[in-house]
Picture 1: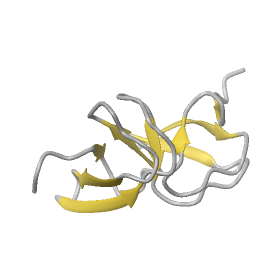
Picture 2 (picture 1 turned 60 degrees about the vertical axis):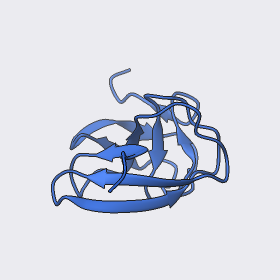
Picture 3 (picture 1 turned 90 degrees about the vertical axis):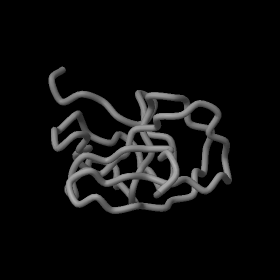
Length: 95
């Protein structure tokens, strides 16, 4: 596999983390699922900056977001597969 565009730690993760710069809407992305050493493919539907997240599947408003096998917050809007996941559509559950 060529260098991945995003990383996913475990199969239960709902987002992948972008590890390259310059992701544009419409770009086909390749990801690495570390737990099972699988290659994943997804189309980015938004520009996504380095270090931000991409939705691996459709996420419904109120769903828990899982990154690196940890609960990082809840969706505050519906997020479609391939869309940018960040503070505009995810909030922490702490406050």
